Image (cartoon, one colour):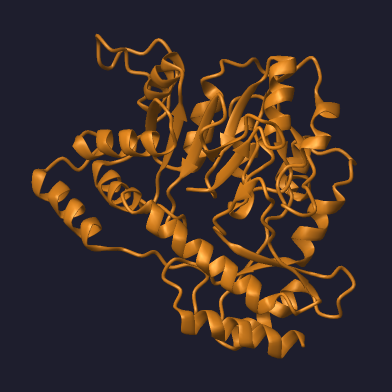
Length: 377
């Protein structure tokens, strides 16, 4: 079976983890924590990095740092993983949903401003499947309404955005460098993995200190086991950080591999008229975290049928995200009204992603392409 994703574990990953084990520093204290935080923050041109136990906990901590009031609103894409909504809800706030852009599959920035109310406090753009959100209009909206931005770059390690595109001051910046705070996930299928893990990045020292405190049960600095605030145990272990550091040190190599896989898929599949392939806007350098394909709305085969046929031929797939407005638990909790999200619905119903991990071989890629041609042509 050709897996959807398989991590690439190299020599330094083994070396650093063994060094960590031999040192005895295997919990949330140790030099690899500091090294991973500083290395990733520097790579993303940020001042501060705060490791967490997962991307989800990074989001939850980032929202908590804003000190919002119950019922305050955060605008999020409906087409994303449920972690985004959970981070808002667990902080007693309300997620307000925005549909996806039909081409990039990211939050449609043109739909944000109409969702702003007096209770809106933040926007959470999510770079979907490795393609950047168009951040410039979101940054402008945030400045206009004095809103925080929590930039979810969990799926976009190493992706770049042309900030100020169309102006004389345009420059390429890393995804994760643009928000009030940004977050990353280092789950096993990410470009940089620590097995499980996450990180918050920010340039604000007060937010950085607050995030460090929240992730560590809000211990008071001068008296351990004294708590004036409620916190979480969201710490990353030194073992995970050792693995993550080794992965981060070769991020450029990994990005090149992923971009090559993406371009090869596009070259080999572009003649299949029945599917829509990922794009790359001229203001983006995407990393194809997952290479997705979307069937035509009226195609005689649906995404589930295609997935079954591919599985029968030894090719693993995954369905696209199901929109937040389609989640039964969020509907039961009253966070979803009767609003329509046509683009998200189309993507959820007709999209799936195919094997595209960094360990994918050329032979495997060609097998996937040949099989798709066989089924769809």
